[in-house]
Image (cartoon, rainbow, N blue to C red; front, side, top):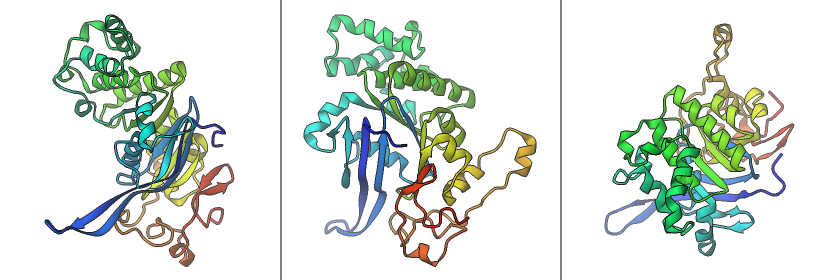
Length: 326
């Protein structure tokens, strides 16, 4: 169930990008609806998984939450304050931090680890200058970076170690919410497990709330309390991680789950894969009615004209007018 008093809340968030033509006299000829009316809540200490195909709007939504992209409409609320308003944005900088997909690109190659972790402490004046080295060592130890490596630069570390540094930097400001945008997708499988276990440990020990974006449904199930499935800028299914992944209801979620390989050879041989026809529609020209109907194996004529709302069905929320019929 959605939390009664969320620490983070998204209310009808929309992020649209104008498409213009012309060099001197520009004219808007269309709008890319990357995020189109998302409503989500996140409780204190909760991990919310966000999944979907590439291009569905997950990363755009993450950057909109962080204020890195301006919201076209709707609002983002952090601890009861609307942080989409300019007056509240500065107050949210410390409480809301992000871990990016590529740790090498997100770290400054010109400064070492010690300076990377010390910089946010100085900017926000969280520690006196004399206490900063001790806090830097504490942050490094928290994510498993030996103190002897603090003088090294990002290029001297492996991908997993760089991601640990990025996580430590996010923790430097003692945030209450972290948005992790596919933090393990660029790492080897064995290193992925280490980073996932680290994130789970930090959530448990520090009481963090986490928005975890990923492609791997098995990873999301392992780490998340709830899962939101996104398609073409909209949430199409939302519920407890085990319920959504073990018993998907929306046709799109069923297709995603059917694509997950099984470790059991017998189960893998009998796995029934649902292959969706065609490619996802362009957010520049989304279809009328249900956005999934051009690829849905259960679509009917009414799906082409009716936009389904995210409504309660059984033990989760889903956006499909034919739920329970198939």
